[in-house]
Length: 188
Image (cartoon, rainbow, N blue to C red):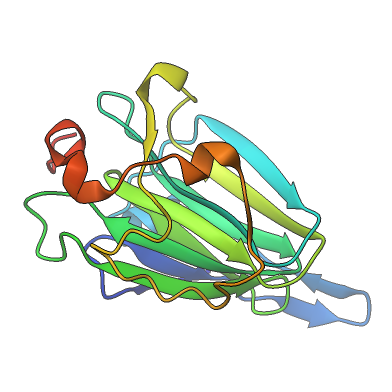
């Protein structure tokens, strides 16, 4: 398992190193020691899966507010997605910046999402399955989000037409209208 930095402070791409033989392959998808060696102290609280029937489905941009801020490790185990994170940590050198990467069953990549980051994705094909490892329990009273197409960030989604998005995700407000309530600090 390889851990590689991204342009955003503290976020990382995790690459599995499959050992192949005639049966297929075996690979580690999580190793606490490897993560700790790269400064990631990930404490697993729960795992979740999301299945998406259709291509161009967008889920996001989600996060939980302190004191229930969460880290995530996102893996696409079937199909492919364009995964996006935004650094919302006020004192970060990459505050307000976003990063996107394709995760698929073929490329063997996962994305580590630190606390204080918004997260979302767009399916690139139908019948996608996403596996989330999360460091905090889901706490509905601390759930929040920002619009997937918020002009403050200018995310370049692969597909902007014919998208499928939930009513809830369409209702998130623009970041600039709610910053007082959602700014994170490194301590959160």
